[in-house]
Length: 253
Image 1 (cartoon, rainbow, N blue to C red):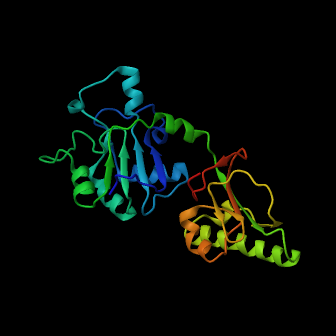
Image 2 (image 1 turned 180 degrees about the vertical axis):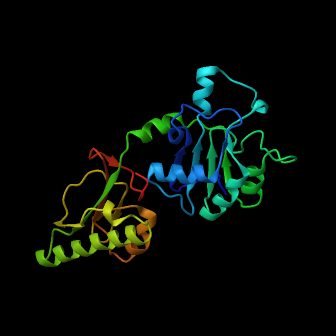
Image 3 (image 1 turned 45 degrees about the horizontal axis):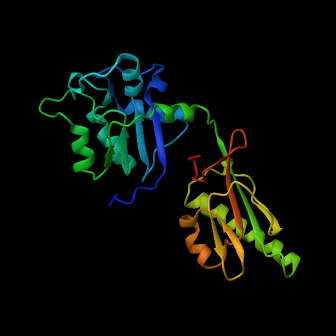
């Protein structure tokens, strides 16, 4: 199932950042209330299908103090987080340790989170990752705005082309709102640019062979409308807090 990779929204919950420490200590447990607090601190909400990455700071600890035997303790999720993970319906759980806190605190259960996610919920696991560089990058991203611009052919009636470009921009905006769950406050008013023009920062592009236009948008999300010719010539870009293009993925830039 995962041989060709997994594509979904990734959400990093940086627990050391939340607790204002460099790393969690060996055997330190993360509880559901910590996950809730991290969401609030990071201004994000974990949703169905997400790839959830939980940072404990293990890599930073190892760089500072050297390696240690995991059997002597690892920070991680307490088993009480299983209901929280089930309710959010995540697709993948990643950790810079092994997801489970060690020791687990439950007699006879060494890795209850492994059993409760991988075995009982079918959630794929990523263990022993290094999230330090990702966490540092995340600190520099304070927000984003989604900009949508519609384009139409440069031939034909100018008024009709203007109306067509407005409709295409509106179609994409509605998809981002309804399917992508992008907050309206994160979207600029859709722009109708009339005839084709130069644009930058596009996520992907596909040629509309029938009319020779360029359809610029997120391919999978717009596939259905694109087949109907409703979104050809649409430009979409995500703008960061410094007007730098980010990969278009609502609430993920």
